[in-house]
Length: 114
Image 1 (tube, rainbow, N blue to C red):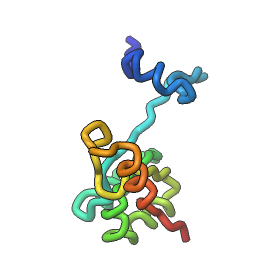
Image 2 (image 1 turned 120 degrees about the vertical axis):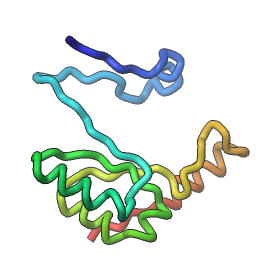
Image 3 (image 1 turned 90 degrees about the vertical axis):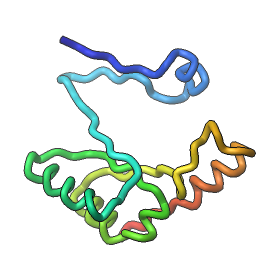
């Protein structure tokens, strides 16, 4: 059985430059985690991923990165990917003065690599 999950057509049309589908030689799952790093959860999760030789992408909130940079460094050292999930988890569609505020908040999220 095959399940395809795709964003609505309107979203795909708004972001035509984005890649929405990629042919794979074998079935592939991309595992992602949002809103971290969280000290009560992320280290445990990294241990589970290591146990099963799984790589994932962690979309981090800048303020959490600031508070728990050592966990971000551990994510990176374990060769997982890291993505930007804004500095303070703004809701893009609900943010007043969307473009300026949201982009500034996204740019404030810095992850320094050792």
